[in-house]
Length: 114
Image (spheres, rainbow, N blue to C red):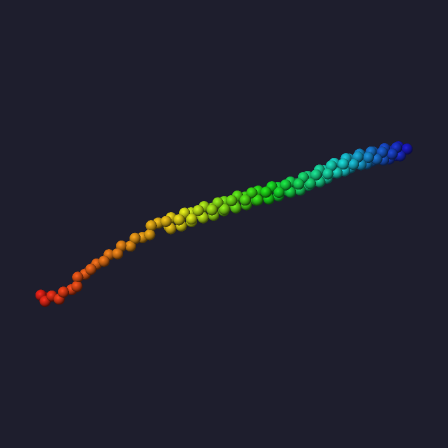
């Protein structure tokens, strides 16, 4: 009978170990599902962050493009003003006066005095 009692105790110990292992497996499964749900939430938050950063980058590019267009327009306007001023100054300068010099050379007289 001692052998049967020993086998029964060992069977009970194995049963206890199996129950503990099963309880641990259930706890681990619960933690894994928590981690999985957290990972899904993080993935969703990451996608939302990516969308918002793209929108912000797009807005910044539009703003930079606007300022570049303003700068180009201003430079073109200033160049046009300078050209108009230069043309106005060139057209308003006095006409060059021409001086006519008439030189009269007396006719050569034949001289016989050589």
